[in-house]
Image 1 (tube, rainbow, N blue to C red):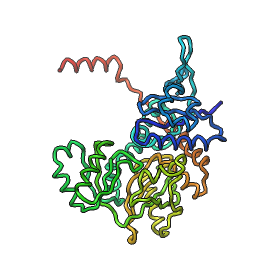
Image 2 (cartoon, one colour):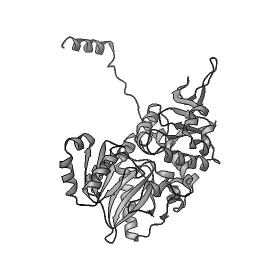
Image 3 (cartoon, rainbow, N blue to C red):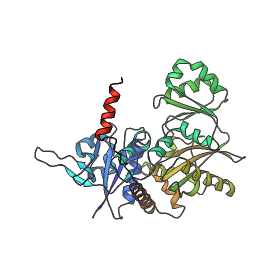
Length: 393
């Protein structure tokens, strides 16, 4: 029996193109594995497509042509109750083609896809999928909620304030006063985005107002934090389950600006390598004690958020003092952070195979539980009781 692995990517997200790069890297790495790769591309307008046309990275240079050359599809159940990817066939008498889904490799970045929404679709159709579940994905995508959880668990986070667009419109002066109590420089961040999109360091009020207005183009919820200076960024990946998290070596990403930008991450000479093309020091040139502390904190946060599969955790380190703060978690990191695991002795294909194994094992354990509760609530007696309640209105 063929093991059909659906690789899902794209989506209505500012990080759409980054997702495509990650998916193409994964598909290439899985070429010589037992899985039959089925691409599932979600266009920026939300339409779903599949087909061999989607396997060539060059075809994404013109996203408009995909709708003409790829095949529309959706997930449904066949007559046996199995989850299948249904491909739409043209022609009055053509019958749609069904492909039974073994598992889904999620390769989304940001917004829809990484925030728990697609994970909810997989849960609804009872399909094994890689990465964190609905809760871990949604919490990981919300910087304010993630930091609130960390703060409650004693994990250090940077001081900051958050506000919504309507609050900014109603009381801009009051919010500016609160922000300036943090003292400049401060960092503006959209709450629900990654890849440094909409993130900016500002040093005065005029720049702050401009940066906030720009960030609101991407999100209606903004987080402003005190900038750490001098700053060193340190990242660490974790793979496994909440019961058995395993941390990778640490990395120190290197950017052309004080804070690593989208350009530093993805717009270098070899853009096809995604996050793997960015300059970095691996293992990070930090003390052994700081490395161990960040690795332990990474595993702690992974467990706290009930994450699964793989994630990358980013930390801000105050250079000199080695005081560090949790910055964010990426539940589907760019390039799956395979470069960190390569340095930890795990190849990219082996890493992906482990993620699929974790997804299938987690799915099997979940289905081994009692999923329904037998009750006579809808018996004739109970129905009569409900009818009686209507008479009391």
